Length: 60
Image (cartoon, rainbow, N blue to C red; front, side):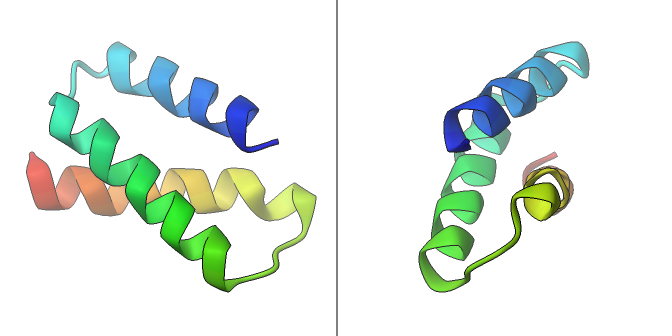
């Protein structure tokens, strides 16, 4: 499931022409959150979008 989420995040990353560091930070944030929390499968996209939003605010 993580792989599908990351593929989706990569496509959004390329669509908006974001910095490579934003993608790396997004994946890092997702991994760190999933390490510590058990979430429902249907909430996984919310974690991905939120991580991308935080990373883009930090890096862009």
